[in-house]
Image (cartoon, rainbow, N blue to C red):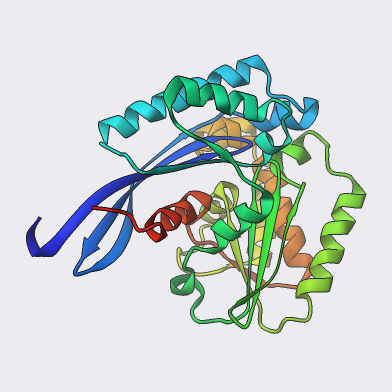
Length: 300
């Protein structure tokens, strides 16, 4: 291309507890440096967590939806001439007794290799995203990534990783009454022990639900969402009918029942640590996976 610009497409697949996502990204080499931009995002609502957290096994109906989704992703990848990709499965597949068996079958059918990653690795990938354009050069910050099956918390102190932990608290787990007081106490005590003394810590919220809550709040993109406005938005959502959520707020059907439980987790952290605002950049696991592909010295 002109001006020494080379562009290559890569794909990242994130198999979560409430949905499966394919992110296609442009890797751009310009004057010796690599940049990346989003090309397209494809999201399919498959609630693997419903089976995994209640029965410790993925049901045949969900298994078939997952297989068909990955097959469709394979065709999209082929149409986009993508050869380099990463595919990770998180909490629901970690918890399922037949998780690896299903992924082995998918590989035989599609040749797409999917890795079940630990909560720790998930945290590290999420935290690899560059957030300086969102929070400035603050040396102390905390990521919270709430999924359907787990919540990852990553704390940085003086620009260095301080502590990180994955908790079995998520939107789908809460929806199915699978989070007891003991788990909430563990979450609270860990936060107080590891983050309460860090001065001027900035909170960064990751995940589809926090992005939707942010949008519904009417907050200006790029500005942090205040705790009071967060609480007001959750209260407003709680009073909103399913019909209005679907037609007026245009929420996806699979998000309607999990958005409030997920919001409760973010708010719990803010209240526990007396943090008055949360930054909500549009980044997540799939974006961190793109960076991982770039760091593996992608070839043009």
